[in-house]
Image 1 (tube, rainbow, N blue to C red):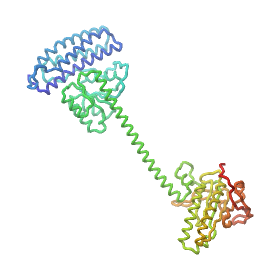
Image 2 (image 1 turned 90 degrees about the vertical axis):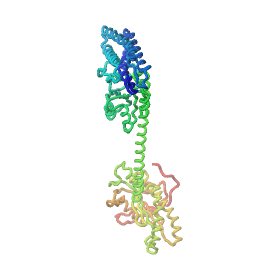
Image 3 (image 1 turned 180 degrees about the horizontal axis):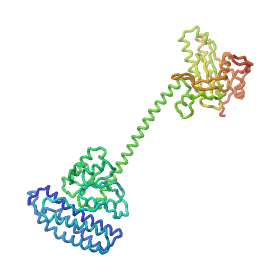
Image 4 (image 1 turned 60 degrees about the vertical axis):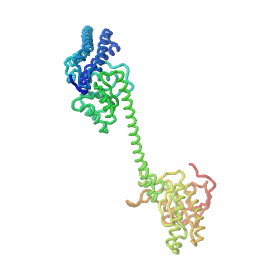
Length: 530
């Protein structure tokens, strides 16, 4: 009979399909016996398995002495060689069915019926002499939940999709994989497989080659061009043993290729290797995603910090550093909200500034003010004071708000003395230029109402109350180089400073005279801690 090489390969493929069921179910029954089943059936099952393996050798060697290169194939030779092993297997299966029925082993009887149908199908295919047999129509029962799971679990368990157009092959693989602890999905065609892959997470796919509509090759091609499915490993399991098919599948991205009937131990090893690689790739992808998320968060935080720094810089142009920090942090109660607090207020201005401004050019006035403001501003920040406002040569500073401090009076005195010292250095330079300027300071302590003053787009942080007026009036009374304080302030810092009485001063806006003192110097003592 004349048959081309492709037909021979197809014929071997068809013959292996029922043979795969015979070997697979006999091995599963033997494993069941090892798990505690009766040993009565063991001899017969081993005979069935060995007979099926002899048939596999005959099929693998087909067409034997024929000359396929010329298209001449002797199908009668295949029938003659296979009839003996087929008869032995069929007889052993019949005996096993009788023994299982007497034992009441219903589950074993069902599997033996499947083996018997596979033997009958194989006998018919060989005896027909048809070079183009139809695919085996051996049917298998749907989900068999009675299969006991194996005692042990594989090192790598996963979700496995089994794709085969033969129900018997699907069921055989399903039961074997469930015994290994895997979760199993079933697909009867290439199209169904692609639909399942898009809908569910799959760790590994066991894929047949020859299927109607979309075959295994086309499934591999579509996986290769679909980014979401590209990394799903595929293990080909086919009765097609042509080297060309193996190479083609590997080139299309398959991890490996096993021919039916497959060795269960080899299949378990290949599945374990594929799942291990898949899980490693999944972990690597997860780490890359986490790294990308961390990078995104870091970039976002850096951008936020840049905005905060920029905002803080703009706020510090109008508010004290402490207040600007509080506004940016936003964690505490709104510092701009009107509130009442006890503060120590310091006023200072330059003596002789009005006359100085009348006789020099505006540019010179601005130059003097810039240097003066810069030096005073540095000392305000150093002592953690809040600059309320500039008024030309005058400044108002207060302590204990918006950041509370336990030693507000002491900080104010230390700042005022440092300012007097620094202005004395500036005066030396001013006198060289002919400028007759000096410094006067007034300090008072009491309660004030504090909050934002101004309008939207331009706000100042201000303190209002008699304490601010009192400090301003003391500053106005101070002679060059004097630091005038109230009796209340002196009582707080008395042990830290040397002071001299100035007497009672009649100040505008105050009905009673105010007792004032001039701070001469600070005793050699560090800043108190409480």
